[in-house]
Image 1 (cartoon, chains in turn purple, yellow):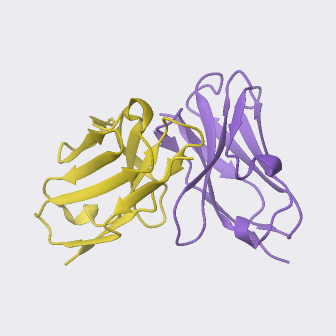
Image 2 (image 1 turned 90 degrees about the vertical axis):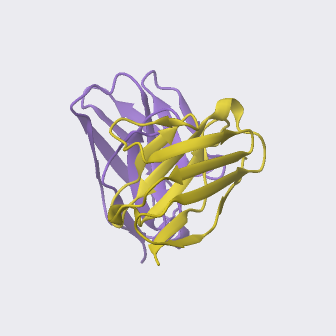
Length: 115
Length: 108
């Protein structure tokens, strides 16, 4: 059974870079599409972007200038970096597997942007 | 960007009743690439339906999806107590993938 687990700081200062890692267990990362999706407290879902196992990426244009998603196949992990964060980036960040329908999700990690 | 509008925002029903949730797209969704998710409090979304009408693995048959083009529907035939949560639609026919704002099903 594939499992995903997000990790990273729960608090980030405004203007700094948010960095999260998703560790995949129970299956190889060297296949499939790997996504980051976020959900502000009490609100809906926003797709941030994905990385394919080949390394190709696709980002939401609304965040594209600030987002980088990368892959580390040796560790079976993929990562998210979001630069120049503001309070509007406060959200639960999920990693998920799938191109389009995401069938496997991590439990999510809350990242708060505050000084 | 394809905007998805879900209605109603809140649906008030009793256990055992049927529920009909709507998802309308601002433009046609290519290939009927429309998914439905269920989200319980404090949990990640759970995939229910993909390709507009295919049930994901392990999903009870009381959940069904239909529609094409710009109009899609999630039907829950008989509401169980655990079904009173939030449902989201998602289109993945065009980038960026987008979600509706959600429909909350509450106990009447």
